[in-house]
Length: 504
Image (cartoon, rainbow, N blue to C red; front, side, top):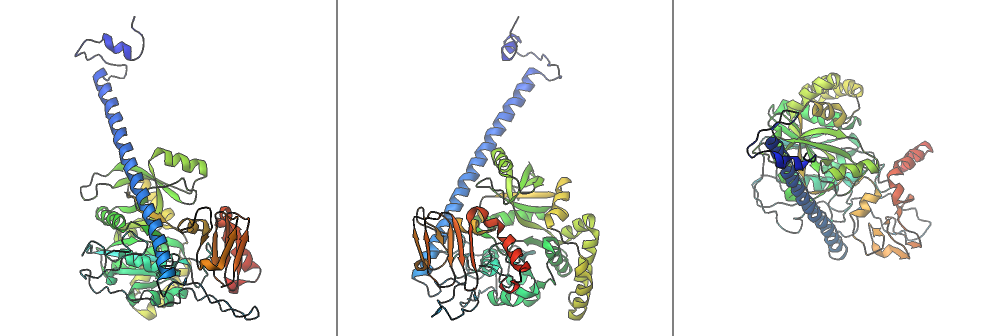
C-alpha cells in the first residue's frame, strides 16, 4: 500500500486523469499549486522592489532636509526660521508674539503650464535641480487643497491663527502649503488650483500664495471636517466644469520623490475617468499606529494605470501588534487621505450615502457666484451640515461595493502629526537632539534624542535628559517626551479650559 501524501502520486500511470475527492484531476491540482507559488514569488519580488524604492525616497528626503538646513543656516539671508523672534534685550521686555513666516515670499510664475521656469517642491528629490519635464499638464484636472486645522498637534509652535500648513518646518523658506502648491504645479495651472480654508486663514494664504486666483479660494464658515470641505469644492467645480476630475491633497503633508508622486497622481486620474473614487496608498516604512491603512484588492488590469487595484477595505488606526501584522502581509498601504475622482461621481456617492449633506452642498454651490446670496445660503445651510471625514462618509461604504480603487505608490510621505514625527524629518548628529531653529541657542550634555525648538531667542541648556520635546516660544514653553507628543492636544484643551485661549 502506498503511503499517504505526495508518494501516492508515483503509482498514478502517466497521463492518468485520476480524480480527487473534489473532482479535480491530480495534474490540474498540481498546476494550480505551481501557479499559486509563482504568483507568490512575483508578489514578493514586487514588494521587495517597492521597499527598495521607498528606502531611496526616504533617504532622499533626509538628504534634502539636511542640505536645505545647511544652506539656509549658512548661506541664505532667510536662514532664520520663520517662527523665530530676536532675543529680548532684557528679561523685563515682553517679547512680541511669534510672527512665524515673516520673511518675504517670492511669487511663482504660473502663467502657462508650458513655461520653461518651474519651481519644484523644496521637499522633493528635485529641489536643487530643474524638474526634468517641460509639460505634465493634465487637461480637465483640478487640484483641491483643504487647508484646515486648529494648530493643536504642534502647539505652541503652531496656533489657531497660524496652523502648521503656514509654517516653514524645513527651514527652506517655503511653508507646507507653499510646498504643496509647488509640488502640484506641473499637473495644473493656477486657474485649476483651489484651496478650501476658514475665514481666519484667508489673508495668510493669499499672502503665501500670491498666484492663487481669488475665486479659487473657497472659504468655509466653520470647520466641518474633510467631507464638507472637499464636497464644497467638488460642488462648485462641478458647476464650472461638469467633466472636472478633482484631486484632494492636504496642505500640511511632507512628500519626497516628486516624480513618483506626480506619476501616481497621473495614474489615479486615469482610473478616476472610469468613474472610480481613487486613493493613493503609501508603502509603509514601519508599523505605524498613527495612520489608517488600506487593504489592497485585485488588480484592475487597466493599461493606462498598470498599478491600480481595487480597495478591499479601509482600516482605522491599529494598535502596534495589528500594525505589525498588516506590514507582515504586504497587502496594506498607509491611507494618506489623498483622493482623486470626478466631481460628479463624488457628489453622486455623497447623495447615495449622505443625501442631506449632498443636498446642502449643492444648494450652496448653486448660489456661489452671487456674493450676497452665497453668504445668505452659507449662513443658513452650513451649520446644519454633518461633520464627518470623507473616509467615513463615502470611501468606506463605496469600497465595500467595489467602487474605490487605489494606486500603490513608493514616494516618501509624512503628515507631521506630532513633534516626534517632525523630529524624524530633521537632521542631527549621532545621539543628539534635533534642533528646529538656531543651533547656537541649544547646549546639551549627555543628551540623546528628542527635539528642541529655540523659538524665543533664549539659551536652552539640557543635562542628562533623553528624548525630550522642548518648544520654547516667546509666550509659552512646552516640555514633554517624544513618546507622549501625540497627547499635546490634551494640554491645549486644558489651557483653553483654564482661560489661556489667547495663547492658542
